[in-house]
Length: 325
Length: 283
Image 1: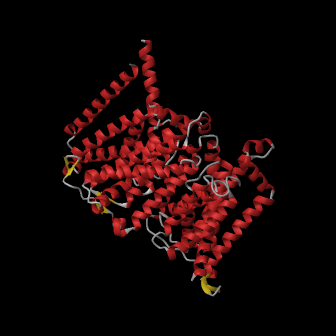
Image 2: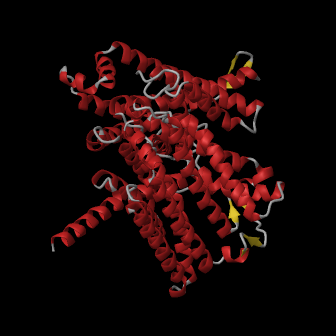
Image 3: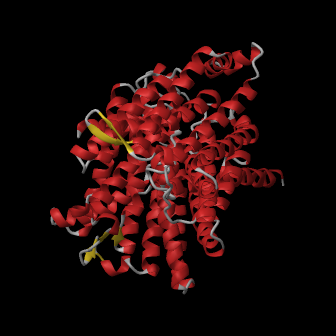
C-alpha cells in the first residue's frame, strides 16, 4: 500500500515536472537563453550517468565522454552502412553501447578504487584517438555532419534542431531518466549495489555475486551518457572527436560532484550550475578553468556532499520545523 | 631500422620511467594518485623553456627542478598532508582541480602556441651505434633515465631515508610510531616527485614540442604504465615503462593505424589476467 502510494506520488511529480518544463519555452522568448538551457539539460543527463556510477558503485570515471561521443558517430555510421533510419539507429546505438559497456565493465570493475579512474581515463582516450585518426569513417578531427531522416520516432526532425522544441524533448528525457534511475535506486538491485559499494567483501560473504551487479551499474551509466550524446548530436546535427575528449569526462564528473551524488536532483542542479557558471565565466574572464578548479577543491574539501547534501539538510530542517509547530 | 626503433622505444620508456617514478613515490607515501602530475611536467617544460631563452639549457634543467621541488613541497605541506585520511576519491578530485588551475596558469603565461626548445650544444649531433646513426641527445635521455632510475632504486634500497620511505609506504602509522617523522619524509618525497616531473618536462622539450596538451598526453601514458606495473610498485613501473615505450615506437612503424591503441590493449589484457597489475602493490 505504502509502496504504491510512493509510486503514485513519484508519477505525479514526474508529470508535474514534465509539464512545468514543457511550459518554459512559452515564457522564455530569447533563443540564446533557450539554447543555453537545452545544452545544460543535455549535459545534466550526461552528468546523471557519471553521478549514478559514483553513487551506486563509488567509481570515479574519467572516461564517460567516450559513450557520450560515440553515440553520435554510431548514429551516422548505422544509417550509412546499415541503411537504418535515424529512430532505429538511435535505439540500436544505445543498446550496443550498453552491451559494450557491460563487457568492459566486467573487466574493469574488479580493479580497486583509484586505479579505476586511471583505467577509465585510458579507455576514454582510446576512443578519442580512434575517432580522431580513422579519417575514412569519421572525418578525423573535422567531425561529421549527422544527417537525419525526415521523421524520428514520429516527430519531424526539424523539431530536434530548434531550441524551443528541443528543450522540451531534452527536458522530458531528463525527467524520465531521473524517474527511472530513482526507481532503480529504490529497488532491491539498488540496495544490493549500495551494499557492495560499502563493503564488497561482506556482500560476497553473505552470498552475493559482486562483479555482475557492478558491471550492470556501469552499463546503465554508460547508456545514460549515450542518451545524452544522442540528444547532443541531434541538436547540433554534428559530431566531432571533441565530444569524446577526456576534458568532457572531467566536466561531467566535476558537475556531478558539485551537485553531490546522494540525490539525483542534486546532480541535476549541480550540472545546471556548473554549465551556466562555466558559460558566464568564460565570457567574463579567460581564467574560468582556475576558478572552477578552486571551486571544485573548496567544495570537495569543505562540503563533500555538494549541493545535494545541502538540499537534504535544508529539507530535514524544514521538516523538523514543520513537525515542531 | 629495427635497432633504431628499439632505441627510440628506450628513449620514450626512459621518459615515462622518470615521470612514473614520481607518481609511484607520491602514491606510496600519501596514497594519492596525482592527476596533476602531467601538468607539473608541462609546467617544468615551460619554465625550462623560458630560462633557456635567457641562460642556457643546463640552468633550465636546474631551475625547473628547483621550482617544481619547492612547489611540490608546498603542495604536500599545505595540501596532501591534510588529505591523507580522507577518502581516496577526494584526493583524486583535488588533484584534478589542481590540474585545471595549473593548465590555466601555463596557458595565461605562455599562451596556446607551440614552442620548440634547442638541445644544449654539447649534446647535439649523432653517434654511430649498432650500425645506425642515432641522435646524441636521445642517447643522453636513455642515459639520464638509467641514472635517475638506478639512483632512485639504490637510494630506496640502501639509504636510511630510503628505508624510512619503504617503511612508510608499507604502513605509515606503524612507521610513525617507531619515531619516523612521516610528514617530513612525505614533504621530501612529493618535492622529489614533482622535481622529477619537471626534469622529465625539460628533457622532453627538445624532442617533443611544447604545447598545452603535452601534460595530458604524457599523463595518460604514465597512468597506463602505472596501472600495468601495479599501483605503487617501482619495479613494476620500470618494466611497464620499458614495454610501453617499445610498443609505442615499434607500433608506430609496423602498425601505424593502431600504434596509439596498443598500450591500452596491453593494459586491458593485463587487467583481465591480474587486476592489481604485474607487480601487485609493493614499493
